[in-house]
Amino acid sequence: MAITLAEAKIGMADKVDQQVVDMFRRSSLLLDNMVFDNAISPGTGGSTLTYGYIQLKSPSTASVRTVGGEYTPGEAKKEKKTTGAIIMGGSFQMDRVLQNTAGAADELAFQAEQKIKATANFFHNLVINGSVGSEEGYVGGTFDGLKKLLGGTANALESQVSLKTSEELDSNYNAFLDEMDGFLSVLDGNPSMLLMNRAMLVKLRAIARRAGYYERKSDEFGRTVETYAGVPMVDMGQYFDGEKMCDVVETKDGKTSIYAVSLGLDGFHGISPTGTGVIQSYMPDLNAPGAVKTGEVELVAGVALKNTLKAAVLHSIAIA
Image 1: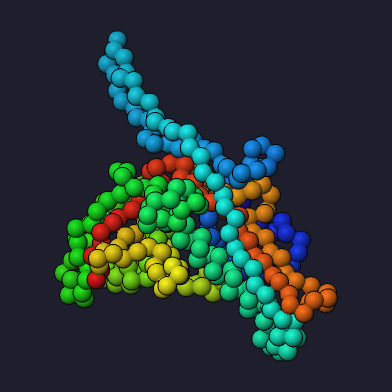
Image 2 (image 1 turned 90 degrees about the horizontal axis):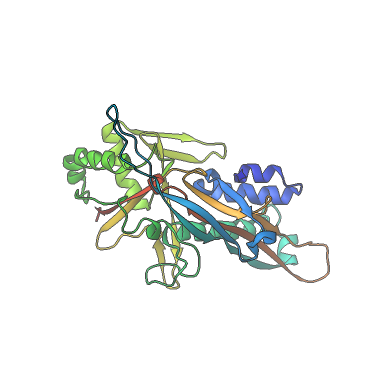
């Protein structure tokens, strides 16, 4: 069964839970649009939050044959794979006096919203940099993200165009448009989103404007959605590495990447437990005894790539 966060919200009776889901949706265009296969069940081996699936590696082909001849056999290639959902989120504490004296500024809502933003950013980081293993350069012990899923595949391409300055944007944008055409052509169908960092989004916006491919519109939350040839461009944001803020999609030696994904159960999608439990919130009862109140928000999710032709990455784009 497939479920979106908007659909999960409908199944929730608690108004606070519905508001928390909306906060998650507002915090992440990716989470808002992602389809989750809520098939992980504790009663069928799901106690470890493991999700098994068949990945299509290469599609089948068709051909012609002569009269009296036979077709040359050719089969679609598939591979059995597993991934897993992880439990992410956090808790916060506040003194009831702060809430009772906050006036128009709702301290509980503020703390919950900030924790939701942090959780959404953490999910973004795992979507790109997650890994089941413990390799350097990945967030280990989680689930495999796009950097690992696409590493070493035919859908990991290298850019040859420099976009470092405005002059290079003017002179090279047509060459980069050609690269983008080739990059997106490896996908089976049109992408749902282009995932990148903010600096790359600024460059791609400038190129889209020069080519007449740029549009912007507001969604139901009043959020501005920018598109390249009709495909939303998503800034994947930043995370704190313990010392400084870092881009989820890194820029290294002046070069960065763009990830393209086709969202859906036959392509790149989320995974979650059965029911509507992808998001849970635990808000304190302010009238109960105890001066310090604790609240929690939780996202139980992972990702799967069912078809290798539904995601691709363009590496080594020179932007700085």
